[in-house]
Length: 189
Image (cartoon, rainbow, N blue to C red; front, top):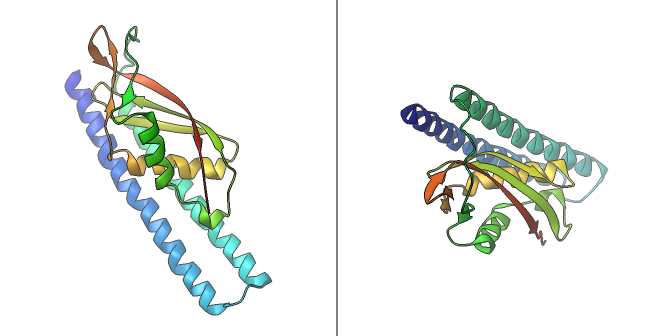
């Protein structure tokens, strides 16, 4: 049973890593097209503004598609694994370097300059599953703007391997848990 769970998690993370490159491809495509647009229309005008918005929508759509693929793959991988019995958690999961460090890392990974978005602070609820080895999956972000939430979720996948989560414990043994973090992020221009 443990081997099956381990195999499922390995497949999830290898697939998720491949999806991170989808975010990078979307960023690269957007940058290339926006440079071309600025060469064509060096001065702001109605057509350039319209095209900028279309490119922004295209980037948002690419991010959401990549997140949807990650979610679908995570569902497929964990569908074969029976849900664990929820143990009584005696110690909550935590980020090794602390919540403030995690929040800073996440904030730095989010680039919303192209959206012209600057609500400060932006309050979210970040929720994900953390296995007994400290691997995160099934990430969901709740906030007031669906598009911004998608970029925050993508940022989480980008930084997921840059720090280590300590899993929750039940009587001194690491266990699977759901982490629910309320955060306030600042987006400065």
